[in-house]
Image (cartoon, rainbow, N blue to C red; front, side):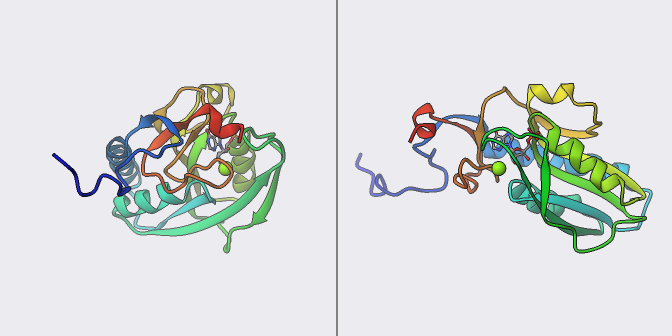
Length: 194
Ligand code: IMP
Ligand code: MG
């Protein structure tokens, strides 16, 4: 009856600050595989490495898993940006903290996004990247909230449409915490008011 490991926290336990798991680790894994297969098929016509661009830090987990699933030549680049405004919503006013290390002119670029909420960050990023004259520019976003449909940008590959609540895990944070959780979860309300 008694468990010798009852007081041991393992990575499969649900974090005490999480109210509800929105998307499980297994569902995320299956979706990443599916998205990678779609992209691989769509880019099968070129031997040229695709250039995956991820935005730090939220998209890091997705980038790492997606790149390994893609199974084709690729390069990785990262940008860091900061959007002015409240911590849980974005204003669309974006500042580049770390730019790409290389030119992307003539490259086939895929922007790897963690989550699209208002879409303001994405629409700014797409304008910024497009102005650097890539050969092509697509977006793969793992999560998308309902607000995003109002943004007039084309997101070719979307993993999950999720409800409009603040979520953490799989790279997404609240005040820099919970990025390491392997699933997507909603925080307990009391966590916000601490
Ligand atoms: P947008 O400009 O409103 O689309 O916000 C996009 C960025 O805000 C994402 O790339 C995330 O970094 C962050 N973000 C938006 N919604 C959430 C959320 O529910 N949890 C954590 N981060 C979020
Ligand atoms: Mg964030």
